[in-house]
Image (cartoon, rainbow, N blue to C red; front, side, top):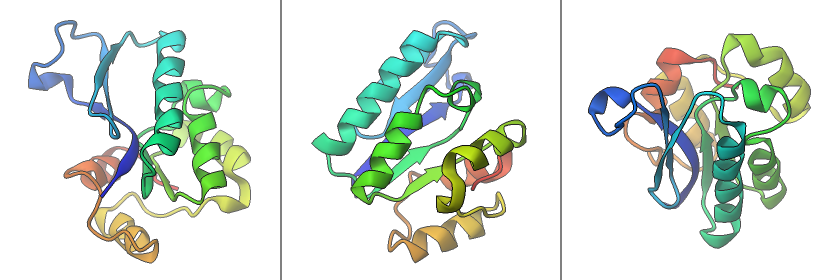
Length: 149
């Protein structure tokens, strides 16, 4: 199943030579990018690559593991989310409580909020006709760390 999006990897796996960097994996290409926590330009580069992958790889699902500070401020993955919606691609986004109000303003009536639990994510995926396609561990990670609208 083709996916698009980006998930944050755990730097504890030893793949990151700079432990203060955040590691993001592009789900369409498999490319891993290390980003310094506040490197907005590089985050926006990754977001552009994700947006382009929506057209190049025709994914069935866009996964964004965190609607973070950059997205809450109007940048980052927002364009990819809008583009996926315009293309009719379902979008699964983890939203931390601190960004929930801004997420709600951004997503409006299109958002379906659910408990941050694997069963809820699985039910939503099933309702989208996408049961059991999320990357291994993604639903569990989202459910244990964030609110998922």
